[in-house]
Length: 67
Image (cartoon, rainbow, N blue to C red; front, side, top):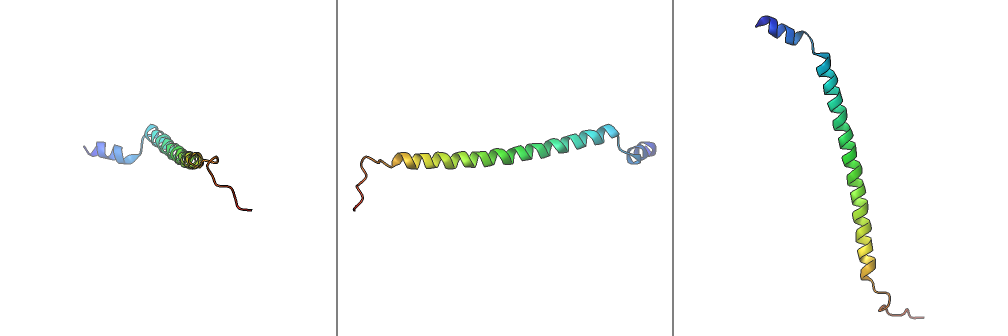
């Protein structure tokens, strides 16, 4: 058992380290993509809200300006 423990503590498997780095990079990429998509979603929501406001204004029934 001591040999097994020493083997485990003695050093990490390079394949395991490479996989861990790859997964960490993937998590960072996904977090960046999430931020980009959330920003795009907020912009689209604001544009849709603006369009609904503009549609609710009926220019044909607006009163003429006083001159």
